Length: 241
Image (cartoon, rainbow, N blue to C red; front, side):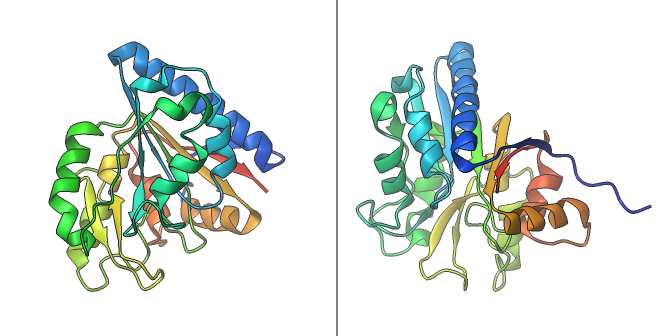
């Protein structure tokens, strides 16, 4: 008998529209709960094309958005006017309708490299963004989450340890990867794991197959395996074909 798969709650949907609506309702409920407990709330959200429908559905949810802080789980080192900026994605697709008054906590600063801005960004996120109340992660077809790529730490092994350790003092790291053209800034797993509500938003059969492998194979070294094995509470998967 092989090893047991890592724990993962699952919510499965027929299509991306149903998923987006359900995830938006759940995240909004989590944010309302956080607001009731401590008067403010913070949510970290992933970029890419997959979450756009979810962002738009979330923007219509009724809650006290003026007391909600939104931050990207990672950021390409590009100004917020750039089409590939995750901050722009949030502003264009989430900060509208009811959510127009939410506050964005940006990662990008106008420095040449993310390394040059690391300490001020790290300090601000630690002081104004953590602990998180909700984190929604996507996953790439190479098994990366946030900007924690499989080649993280190829030239600096300590970077992989910092980025993927479940508990640690560094909430943010600067990232360079051969998989993508731009340098990046990313929340670490230790920062993401401060959220008591952790969701994986994944669509498509190929990504589901990769997730199943990461869940079941203890030899898997992909970052998504580190999420599943290290999260203090089992994440909840929202998946559609």
